[in-house]
Image (cartoon, rainbow, N blue to C red):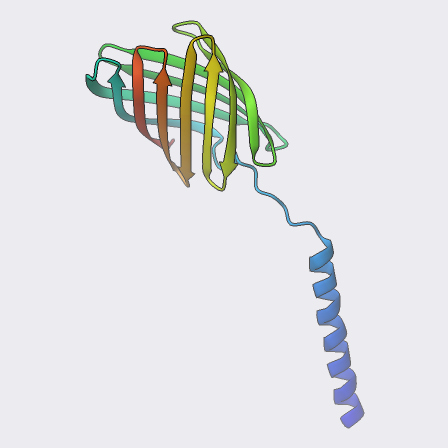
Length: 165
């Protein structure tokens, strides 16, 4: 009986060791910074203008995530009673480093996006001719918070809460 139990213990030990070796040898998959973003989103918030006035604003966003999970195409359309903007972005991820192009089609503004991702949070800047825009996105399931700070435009700040449709 003793040899049989010893044999079972040895097999169990070998099985555990093999599982540990397998887990150590398989690289951990890195989640895309764009995970969960694909699809249509809508919501509202506030826009603050350069002169300090603010008003409610409604927005719709569409995100398309590339097959590899490292590419994001974004269209963001927002309008308040007196202001609107339409942004198109094409962003690529290399690890947690983000780069890409950014275009605001209503006012014909063009810039280059650079940023970082950390978990569900994306932060970056858009730089263009006379333009500096800070962007922060925090995606949590079907909710997304967006903050945009702008220099060089009529708009100074936008804060949004979007929900996935």
